[in-house]
Image (cartoon, rainbow, N blue to C red; front, side, top):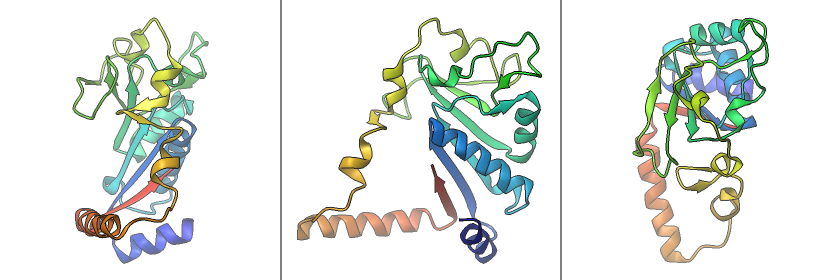
Length: 192
């Protein structure tokens, strides 16, 4: 994938690169976005990361390095989703143990849509704001499985597997595809 991304970036140097992922895919997206910035594959201002229900990926040093390399980094947490709290912070020193990077977008109630009530968490400790998801007493695997009313683990079966479509559906898909291409002219998407 490295060669393809480099070719696309050199062909379209002003494009934004959006890197996204859910759960383990979010961890992979974190590493990929950091790699893009570290190796100057694209201008850092063009690298955007959105993760959903991502576990902690690295330690405090990694979090600080990531934040330097990926200036537009967001961790979306759906209410009391349990996965963002693993691996647990067990060390008395934040420097040694697992630690989050980026700004947490915390939905304190179930995130039904992107317009659901949420807040950006910029409190202390840095990147691990104790007033956001860290403050939730309960933990839920069900909240991890659904983000914005999308059943993440099974969504692909109904929406990503090619199937035979009627002529009317094909026309609708083609129109939708043209609109998407028009809207995404200046963005590259990498999804895990």
